[in-house]
Image (cartoon, rainbow, N blue to C red; front, top):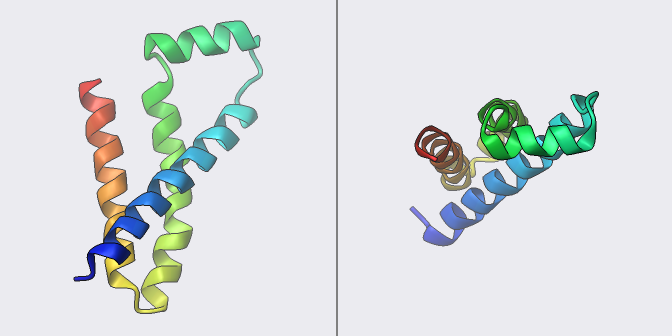
Length: 90
C-alpha cells in the first residue's frame, strides 16, 4: 500500500468532512449565531454535525473505488474513524 496515497486520502477525508460540516452548519443555522457557537462549544451539537458532515465523504470514496484507488479510499475510511473516535472521547 502506498503511504503517499493513504495520507492523501486521509487529508481528503478530513477536508471533505470540514466542507460538509460547514454546509450542515449553514443549513441548520436557524438560531442566532452566538447561541449556535455556544452550543457547538459545549458539545451539544458538534458530534451530530460531524456525523452529518461525514456523509459527504461517500462521494469521493466511491469515485476513488471506481478508479481503482483503494489506498486513497482506505485513507478516507481512516479519517472518518479518527473523527468518530475523537467525537466520542473529546
